[in-house]
Length: 444
Image (cartoon, rainbow, N blue to C red; front, side):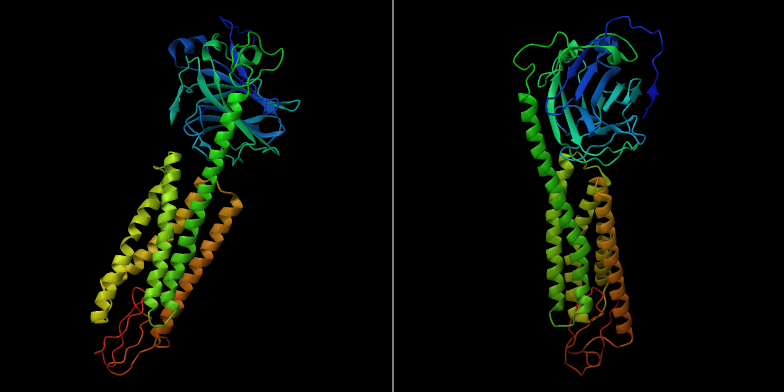
């Protein structure tokens, strides 16, 4: 992505007077957005456009987006850089009710006049591909183009990271620009010195800053912006709750219940343990199915079905369907032969592989959801502890079995049934009634 500060060439003049449309939402507190469409772009419908994002440096960030809603929008976030004297421009793509993701395909240039002065952040921007982007497009000749805005109050980020984790907005809304009244000129930085000639529907322009303000029922009105903002805020909160529910359900299933169900077969020796194992895994699988349903909803809403996280999740949950089938095949064969089968090995190692895959995919999901660093670390620590405990139990129990120190029914007389803790699937199977003095084969 092209990203630089361009100095104005002294003495350069435009061949036509540039006009700008300007919008200042009353809810945002001295935040204003301006846009200009140069004559050549207005004529062809494609090319450079210029816009300005301006607001108090007391805001953590200020954002402007092309589009009528978060999903599919082309968003530009502005926040203080590491020096505190300049601004960082962060192009992003809207993903519905979730934090926008970094857009490395944006062709934007931060122009002269950008920075922080007297407590005001200013970003003068030239965008060379704002007529279309991944997930959307805009008619640069439109008299009613849709835009969204948002701000976040709070401590300054002071970072140069264009992919910085951003907290949810404090205020936001939607409005429309009449781009036909914002066209003209071919300056390299038309907004810096231009005066606004129209006010967007849904907001008010500061006194003496606008000439020729648009008249009509929507001009100088906050009704549209307020209602749109309230609806979008509620939807985003709903989306966030669904993301949290998805993460919690999947985390419990793959980090807690699947490993715990697998260990029951290693640690318990009571009759019927195999069915306790089966019941625990069916419960965990039911949780995973519910979590996958929520995940698919999120992926569809945010247009992320082609992301590795949902792809891995869908494949993994689908493969889990074979686990009870493999387990039942082994169980039926074991009852007749009291011997290890191929199906047992397949059941054990497919289960282990899918648990590991689910835990790793959980980490990918946390990254995709822009989870906090602390939350990601906590997840990693918990998953690591569970993995160590699981391996320790498998190794220790396996060694005890190998030395003959564990397992009931070993060396018992003919016709007396015992338990086999060394079952390849981790299931306890009874001895065949005719297996006098024969210890069933098993693996760890």
